[in-house]
Amino acid sequence: MSEKKIELAIKYKIATIKINDPENFNPLNKETGQLILEALESLRDNNEVRCIIITGSGKAFSAGGNIKQFKASIENGNPGQVMDDLLKVLYKIALVLRLYPKPVIAAVNGWAVGAGMNLALSCDFIIASEYARFRQSFVKLALIPGFAGTILLSRQLTWQQAVEMSFFGETYNAKQMKELGLVNEIVPAENLEEVTMQWAQKFARGPTLTFARTKKLFFDALNTSFEEHLENERQMQIKSAESEDYKIGVSALIDKKEPEFIGK
Image 1 (cartoon, rainbow, N blue to C red):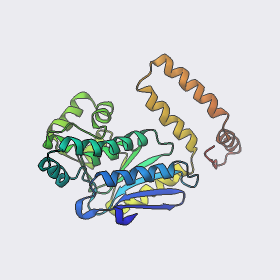
Image 2 (image 1 turned 120 degrees about the vertical axis):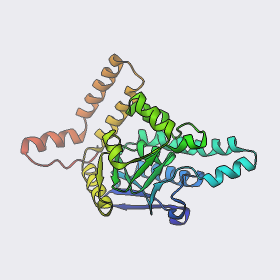
Image 3 (image 1 turned 90 degrees about the vertical axis):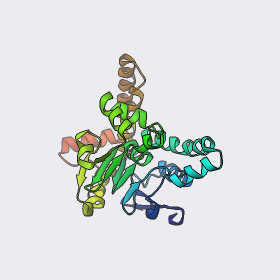
Image 4 (image 1 turned 180 degrees about the horizontal axis):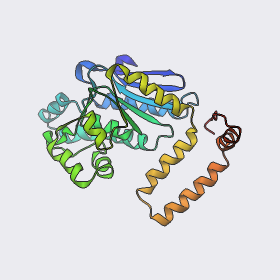
């Protein structure tokens, strides 16, 4: 897949999807987006994969949309159609990640700009290099915060923080992002891969079915009443008590051992 700007590697039941177009700062064009989407779909039902890492090569996680392609679309008189074709793919990725049945970690190695930043925010966890930089750059192009940016930012920040980040389009470093609660951990650049793998291995050993159900409930909570959500949560807990991992967890706790979950 590397010739198509995406690398996929599987090790220790962890899949790493790397955007590999460093000369162009790993842009999210239609082709790259489709490859990321195909990789995620191919890994969904792979029982040998229990956690996903998304990262970039070189100095960027992803610089977002390809500005040269945007300029060409304007010159060709079809900017709306080109944008529509791109977003059909990118918005599928945003939804797939939010409901993905396995933990997904963004290992942000460098610049995460525009759609690249929101790709990271769509993941469950963000581990950032000390050199990571984040920017909602859409306003510079007179675009709204795309790739689910308006819902991701408004749900995770205060109104004032979200509009400031969106309207100014300024750069935030890893420390500022962590202070806003958008980054889980900051690590030295040389330790990013090692620390991310440590997180991923912990999740890979965990009750992945429980992770999937928890994510689904978090997602559903956005659009259901408190009373309705309590019932949904209650029913899901009953199902969880019927899982094999529940038996494993209870037995391990009684025996004072570490549980060896199987994701079922």
